[in-house]
Image (cartoon, rainbow, N blue to C red; front, side, top):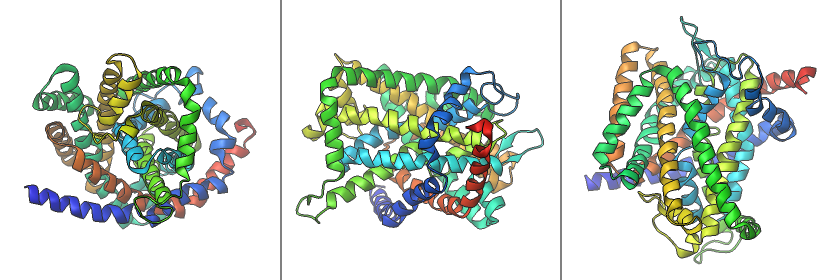
Length: 465
C-alpha cells in the first residue's frame, strides 16, 4: 500500500507540474485580464454599483434579492452555496502553505489572481445563467458543461469537464475537507476519527438528500455566520498588532518582487515560486476559472445573467481579498514563518493555529481556528456535493438511479475522509483544480464575445448606471 501511494504521489507531482506550469498560469490570469480589459474593468469601475446590487440588495424589496419562487434558489442562497464551497480549508491551510512555500510575496500574487478572477467568475456565471436548463418541475440547473455544449457546440469538451469535476468532488469537496473536520472535532470535543466520520456523514446526508433547495437554505445561514466569525477574529488580530500592519504589507510587496537567487538557484527564482503559489492557492481558494461556482449560480431564480454575475465579483472579493488576507496577516504578524514551522497542514490547524494562538490571548486563537475549520470544511462539502450531483447528472442524462447512488457514495466517502490523512488528497485536489480549469477557460475565451455583448447591453441601460 505504501509503495502504491508513493507511485500515486509521484504521478500526481508530474501532472501537477504540467497543469500548474507557465502555460496554465498564462491561460488562467490571461483570460481574466483579457475579459477585464474588453469590458472596461467593471470589477473596479462598477464596484459601488455591484456592491449595492449584491449584498445591498438584501436590504431592498427586490425580486431575486431575498424572495424565492419556492422552487429555485434566491440570488443570496445561490451565492451562499457557491461561497460554501469556496470558503474552505484553502482559506486557512492553503494560504498558509502558499506563504511557507512561496514567501509572503505569494499573498500579493493571490490578490492579483483575485482581481482578475472577479471578472473570470463573473463571466462564468453570466454564461451559466444564459445557457442553463429547466426541468419539468421548473427547476433551474446548469454549469460549464451546458454552456460548453450549447454555446460552443462541443459535446466532448463538456463531457471532459463534467467527468473531471465529478471525480474532483470526492477529493476537493469531501476527503480533504473531512480530514480537517475530523481533526477539529477531535481537538474541540475529543471525538475519534471514526465517530467524527459517522457524525459528518449523518449531517451531510440529512442536508444533501433534501436537494439543492435545502443546501441553499442551510448555507444561507451558515456562510454569513462563519464568515463574520472569522472576520471578527481577524479584526481582533489587526487591532492587537495595529502598529505592525504597515511593516507586514511592506514585507508582502518586497517579497513579491524579490529577484534574489534562492539556495544558489536561478536569479529571480523566488518571484517565480511566489507567483506560482499565489496564483495556484488563490484559485484553489476562490475557484475563479474552475467552473464550479457557476453550477450553484445557475440554480438561482435571477432572470438577468449580469445581475447574478455580479454576485461572483462579490464572492471572490469576500473569499480572497478579505478572508485570505486575514489568514495571511495572522501568519506574517505572528512570527511562525520565521520560526520555520513544518506543521503547515497539521491536523489541529498547523501553522495557522500557531499564528492565531501567538496573537490572540490564551487559547482563544486555537479555538477560533478549530471552529472556523469545522464550518469552512462542512460548508465546502455541502457545496461540492451539489456540483458533483450536477456533473454526474449531466453524464448520465439526469438518471434518477445514478443520482441516488452518487449521493450514497458521497455520504460514505465522508467517513473515509474523516478517518484518513488529507495531505496526499490536498496535492491531488490541487491537480484536479487545474485540470478542471482548462476546458472551462477555453470555453470562456471562445464565448467571450457573448459575455462582452451581454455585459455591454446591461450597462448601456440608464437604469444600470
